View (cartoon, rainbow, N blue to C red):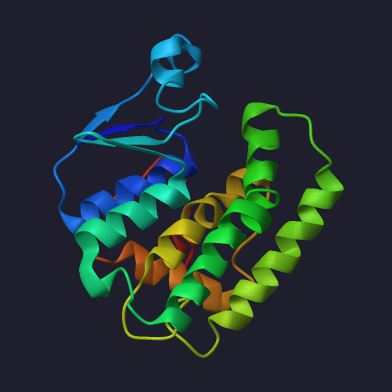
Length: 203
C-alpha cells in the first residue's frame, strides 16, 4: 500500500492516522519538484492533489474518500458502522471536514503559514462558528459520533483543528474541544506532525 502525501498536509495526516491506527503497512511517498502536477500523478488524481492511496489495483483520491475506503475495507464495524443512521451522521461530519473546516481554520493556516491570499474576516468567522459547534457537540459525549469509540468522523475533523493555532486561532477557550484533542492524541497509533497543538503542553 502506498500513500502519496505532503508532510505538512492536514488532509494527508488524516489518512496517516487511520493507517497507523489500523496497523496497515504502507509506504509514504512525497511528490517533489512539482511531480504531483505531472501526467503520471494526474492519472491517479486529475486535480493534482495529495493524498492519494494506492492499494494494489485500487487508487483512491481525496482524504475523506480514502478514510471511507480504509474503514470499510479494513476497519470492520469498529470503524465503519453498519447502522444507517450512524452512517448518515458520519457522512455529515465528513462533509463538515470538506466545507466548514476547509474554509475556516484550514484556510487561515494556509494564509498565515503559506501566504495564501484569503478573506481573513470571513474565514475567522467560519472558524469561530465551527469551534462553537464542535465544543457544544463534545460537551456531553466523548467523540463526534455518540459512543465509546472514535470514528473516521473524528479523524476527518481533527488535524486542521489541532493545526488551527498555526492560523492564529486560539483553542484553549473551547474546553470540551481541548479534551477531545487530548483523547485523540492519547489513542494507540496516534502519530504526530509538525504544528499540531497539544493541550497538555499548555497546562
